[in-house]
Image 1 (cartoon, helix red, strand yellow):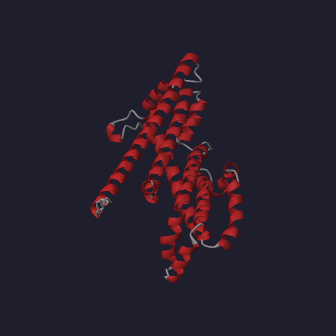
Image 2: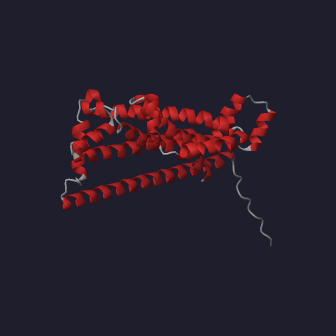
Image 3: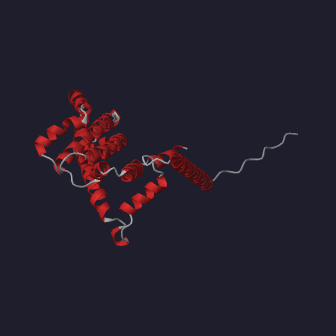
Length: 296
């Protein structure tokens, strides 16, 4: 006797939507757990490195290699022990950290704007890119310290010379990466834009810029590191009366090794925080995290 198969219950749209929602929630929870685990591991490695530094410095007992606890205490007393109304900044911090941040921020913004604008202009045309790329590569390879005499003649010592040295060296990573990103735009999209008769501004805003955005941020991260380095270098030159580089040379001239170490730690912390902030902005604008969630 043949048995009649029992039909499976029909899946409703609501059931499918509930399964997709549960899947997305599970993926989000797993991603959050992985991120928390990674952050905890990074902090653990940092704490272990600091603990090793502390133990080695205490065992060595040299004035040239102070422990991190002593450096942190000195940096706090020197720069971050001010009143709450001034964001806990001391007068020394206002005279040291803020001018350097101002120079670096101005140089970074100018380099970013110039690099993105010129990169998009060059990346739109393969012929223009082929003609300009050797010039870009040559200018990028010139060491920044060799241009200091030129900038001194053009701008004299002071803030204009410092900004010129920062911008000239930091603009090339942004420009070159932006041009390469614009050249990688899907030709099919360009053909569709031509069929739809999009204007040059619309092509730039809806096609070239989104296509080049990941490469733009790669160039911006390199440019940010260069701005920090060149900011310190420019403040080591004559004619500077404030800033982190000036504080470093002043501490070296007075053999204040604890302040020298505090400046080095401050520069490392500034670079880490600025790069982390730029990565957050990149994730927000490019949607890198959301794309990863949709593909899992």
